[in-house]
Image (cartoon, rainbow, N blue to C red; front, top):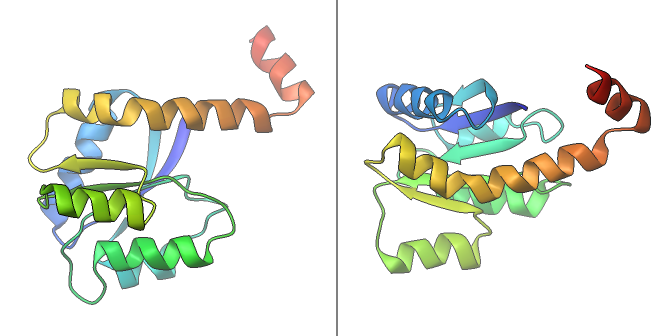
Length: 145
């Protein structure tokens, strides 16, 4: 499965680590768009292109949680968003998941195994949605390949 994902973090090193870990997870063939903060992410975000987002909480200009709220208010379709952050308290997790509509939550530092386990339910939904959106002829072509 090919997935165009956006990685939003003010640390270039952390963006590279997230992308490397996602590639190593082998959950999908990833194409990445990077953003340095929430404001940058909003200018690059296109729900017709970006199918999954990985967002840090603490960033300048616009925090990750502000970005999530803005996307949930304005995006016409539901793009899964995963917070990848050092904010690991239950209050923060509950705020992100219950109040803001985050689909997954990974606390830094993390391993590829943790990432895989946390993301499998999201990828199951993405796979089902992708299969559902394929037409008859593309499904037939896939089955013949």
